[in-house]
Amino acid sequence: MRLIRWNPLRDVTPWHPVTDLMSDEIDRILNQLQGGTVSNGEGAPWLPPVDIVERENEYRVKVELPDVNKDDVKITVQDDVLTIRGEKKKEQEQKGENYHRTERLYGAFQRSFALPSSVQSDKIQATYDKGVLTISLPKVEAAKPKEVEVKVN
Image 1 (tube, rainbow, N blue to C red):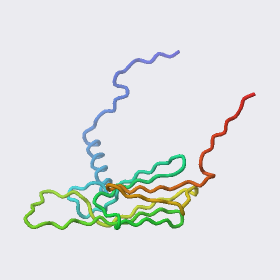
Image 2: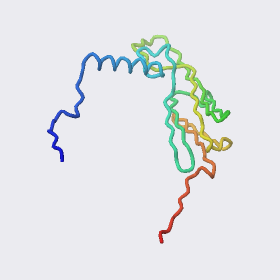
Image 3: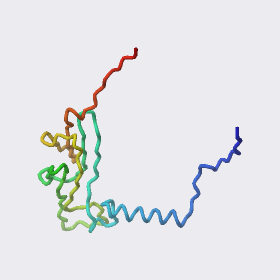
Image 4: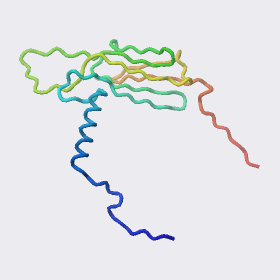
């Protein structure tokens, strides 16, 4: 048996002001390139955030589309690729209003996702409620997990 001297700071990562600040700056730039928040809200692509969850009988895709009319969203499936297109239109500025800051992003967007072969593309359904688009991608029967009980002798 080997004894190891206890060090209370063994798992603590040291902070280095130069590299940590550079890391934050790189994260901010990458976030902007991926459609994240920017300081003035103009000139950056808008990519709505997406959650994809696998369930027993389906895959479920949830897309946040605040202030987007459901008629401005188009969902297509071609060659096992799910594509969501749309546009978030900018509100007309009213005379007499003084905007101090605008961070909300506007414009056309497109998100595409490769679908597994286990999806029944002819039975895909979508709902839109309170700015959240939910797409249900049912699995084919063979892809659903089956539980088989094995008896031990």
